[in-house]
Amino acid sequence: MSNQISFSASQACQVRSSIRTINELPYQTMAAIFKNKIPYSEEKHKLYFLGFFEECYPALIKRFMKEQNISKEEVLNLFYKLPQWRGELFKFRKALNNGEF
Image (cartoon, rainbow, N blue to C red; front, side, top):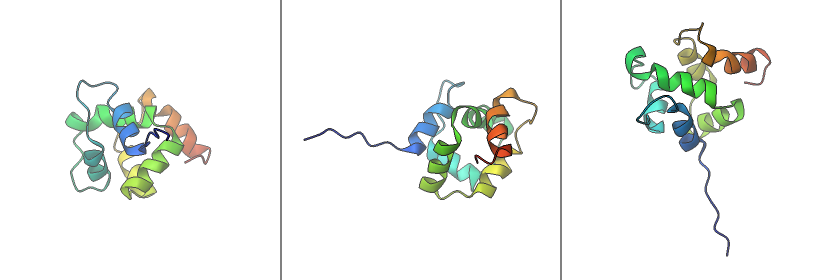
């Protein structure tokens, strides 16, 4: 009998996105923000989403999108709401430009 560990991309993105904060933003809330069910607030959410785009690699983001039924357009809409000069966005922007996302 093996003790398999279930891996959730949503949970991984939740932890990785919260790297700069004391509290975690639940992945359910993140998904609702991507889907515009909860409005994005720069004051409340910016650090979480900067962490998301820096710490979550493209394949993980795609798994998160699949688990939460989030479209590429919804991800990009939120990405472009973030301050584009921030270094945290470099890796994701590079993946976007290289066709990895």
